[in-house]
Every structure is written in C-alpha cells, then in structure tokens.
Length: 350
Image 1 (cartoon, rainbow, N blue to C red):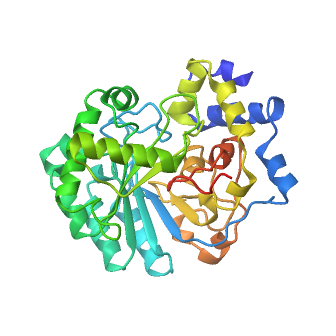
Image 2 (tube, rainbow, N blue to C red):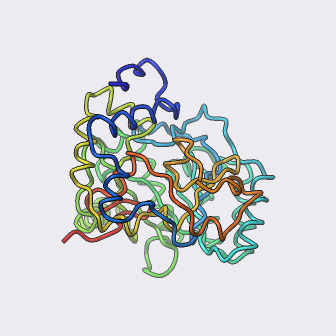
C-alpha cells in the first residue's frame, strides 16, 4: 500500500496525502465518485455561494492532534492586508452574507481586528473560529471577548470534551483549564446566554478513530456538565467528523487505524447527507487568496474546477455558484452517518 511508503515523510504534504487517498479508492473501498454516480449525483454541483470561509493564517498557539490544517506556532503562512482587501472587494460586490474566519488561530493575524471591522461595514454576518486558549495566551488577546461582542461576531470554539483529561490529550496540557476560563469570560460579556444574540457554539471532534455520536444527545450532555461544574452556558454543539487528512491522517497511519477508519466512513455513507454538504454553498479562501470548494480541499491543494476564477482577483460569482465540485475519498467524511460540516450534522438519521 502506498501509505506505508510515505511514513517517513511529513504527511501534511498534499501529494503524499492524495496518494494515500487514491490508493484507498483504487484498491480497498468503492470510490466516492462511484457512490455519487449510483445516486445520480455526479457531478456534484454547487447551488450558490452563501458563505465565504477565509483562512487568514496557519499560525496557531496550539498543536492539536486532529488538526487538518497542520497549524502551529511555527507556521508562517499569514494573509496579507492586500489579500484581505481582495476579500473585501469580493464581499462588497456580491450578495454573500456570511463570512467564516478561520486559521490557525485567526486572531494571531496582525490585521485581524481591522479586517473584522471592515467586514462589518459591509453588513455581513461574521463567524470567528476561536480556539479559546488564544484569549489567555497573551495580554493583548484578553479583550477579545469584548471585541467579539462589540462587532456581534458569532463565536465557534473547539472543546473536545467536558473533561480535562480527554481535552488535554487531544489539544495539549493546560488547554482544558484555559478553555474553561475563556468560556467564562465569553459568558461574562453575554455570549451563550440568549438564543438570538451573541451566539457561542462549541465543536466536538472525536479523540480517536471513530465517528461522533448523536449531536443532539451530546449537546444535552455538554450543557448539563458545563453548567453544573463551571456555570458555563452556550448555544449549540456541533459534532464534526475528523477528516483523514494532514495531522489526523498521520495519527491514523501511525496507530494502524487508517483502514478501519476508512471502512467506518464508507460503511456509514448516507445518501441524504450528499444534498447538504457544505461545499454546495461555500467557497473556501486560502491565506494567499486562492479558491477551493472547502477547507479540506484547500489543505489537499485541490483548487476549484473553474479555470478562469482560481483566485480572488478573478472572482466570478456566477461561475462559482454552479461549479462542479472536486471530490476525492476524504469526502466520505462529510457524508458518513448524519453527515458533517463546519456547522455540525447536515441531516437527521432515521
């Protein structure tokens, strides 16, 4: 198997990752394309662009085991203010209403606050994917909850468990304690209290080689535990399937779980989830302005299949709104069980 040949190389290299995924499709499991063809859903096409998800840098104060971005303190890829201006121009000249800011830790981009305030001037809804610990990482970030509140940002944050041990195993020593403090700070300025304002949503990713449990049941469990133990309230919990790419792919192979995990994804394929995968209404923008169908394709360096609009400078909403979506074996991750997206489950299991 090709995966065995690349164990001595950094698996964040997109060509190595694609070699593993392609080998899986050819020799072990039905290709994702074949599954779509059987459903009459190939080619998979976008049905508009409602969300612009922007990765403004891969620098992060954490090194999480499940991170598909391979983010960390050593990453130097940071979106420049010039590329941010291209984003603003795109937003100003389109009906896109939601901007999803991600990273790394997006707050570590030196122009993060300027970018947020400029987006707000365009009357867009902004989501920030905050890892929570960044708020405690340095004094200059301590006022982030208030900045988020002033700009009415929706905050989406990862919390793998409501227990210290499981969270720290996945995200690093001390992460749980800092995450709890950050959540309390967000509650103090009004986040997670009301159903309609100052949305605070948490993200659950499995710590091992398994699929997430029922999002609804898990949310109830989280809410009860966090309120009882720490007085913390939040709005929604998103259960997200780990994608077999980058750092998580490295984990699967090094622990001998890759084949088992892919079998789980393939066996749990849900045709209903295909209708609601996030790539159908989202465009992902890389730190250097190139365009992708989703954040996962971005990490695999699989650009959009629209040759004349590969970069923000050539943004063509009409072409992107009906584009054919680029698919590979990792797409099983978004269609397994109840499906998975950056907003959690995409369908209800019967």
